[in-house]
Amino acid sequence: MLIPQTAYICEVGPRDGLQNEKKILDIDTKVKLINDVVAAGIKIVEIGSFVHPKAVPQLADTDEVAKRIRRSPDVEYRALVSNVRGVERAIAAGVTKVKLTVSASESHNKKNWNRSTQQVIHDFDDCIRLAAENRIEVSGAISTAFGCPFEGAIAVQQVVEIIKAFEKIGIREISLSDTTGMAYPRQVYEMAVTVQQLFPQNEWWLHLHNTRGLALANIMAGLQAGIIRFDASFAGLGGCPFAPGASGNVATEDVVHMLELMGVKTGVDLDKIIGVANVVTQQVEHQTESFILKAGKSKTLQ
Image (cartoon, rainbow, N blue to C red):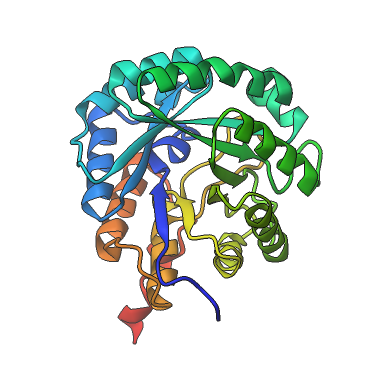
């Protein structure tokens, strides 16, 4: 098998994991979770989002969370923003990297942002300008890149056109997001190969949901295509409030476990990240789809 020796994980649990939960965790709990995933070896954390509190009340306190976390100099702390106001909040909170997201699906864009794809991207100009003035890095994400619950299949060309639009405004770090878990391995492999061939200068991430049980298989397809960066969420929490059936992200502990067995280095302590996932399930007060939390590590059975 042709797979990389090293892979990188962005912990998106504090943002994408908690945004769909019925129970809203308090600030101290969120801060501890972020500090604990960093202590487990995670080097990139999506700590929350700076969007309108009415849209995502679970993350309305991201400003305060950002101020209270214990910052490690070798860790990247990023947050999702949707407009200039979000960038302003990021600046005030001391966040030095933000992510702008747009959907490959017009229908999902209108459900999510109440604007068309082109309107969303056009409005990014002011965000980019303000971020640059304040030395804040900007990355991008393309939601429903592998399929949309409203429109079905998404053509590769739709995704390519958005990448071109991102390129024009200077965004070269891009996440391809399987928002509702519709992707399958061959599709992921072919998409990954295509975008890397067309845009070799870009840095690519895969954001995969496990809605239909294919997230780990899709990660394998991404690895074989040369992708080495993956989003994951503690305990497999997550989902999009604006997309029906968008269940949890692939669980961080499941990803680390699989990669560790294959000899792919992540720098993450598996036992510690399992510990964080166990705490999370206690906090949200329900079981999750994490395989490792249910069955334990393979090595404990050998």
